[in-house]
Length: 231
Image (cartoon, rainbow, N blue to C red; front, side):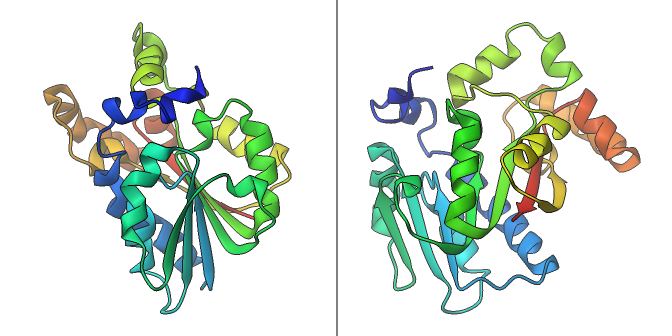
């Protein structure tokens, strides 16, 4: 897939709010991960910040005075986030990995599945912060593989060009020199709103299976992501 979709308006047309409606949910999970690992960063950077809303929401849950910086290579995304600057927050149109800046925490929320050289991206990000937080969608499941066109539809609408299970996502982090400190599942399929009646109907069984076996729910039904803290 051509990366120009993020600058020529294609991605913006497919995702007009750049997933801003998920931002408070993601920020809450990130803040909880930092808190349960006793991390109180003084500087946070988000790579691929999109609309900027995750960083805005996360800043409300961080210690007072934490400096937040968002980077995105897409002019369309920068248009959405650039007006959200504040005394403790700035947004930049550019590539964090081409700088020598260093932060306490780097956040990549639903990002490297879009990047052609995802291994190189994650390996370089290791050099930009002491701790990294990754939110990684688990697109590979029995259900997604059994439904013809499911992954290709995800490729067209969301721009995902790499697809992960829990094991392959965590293995990628380890393979790029990271040490995973902590991780957990997140469940967008049950926590976030959906217009599909089929998805609403499946919420009950999905929650029941997840309660009984989180791994089985992610492996068989999909609709989950992992949130991983690494150094």
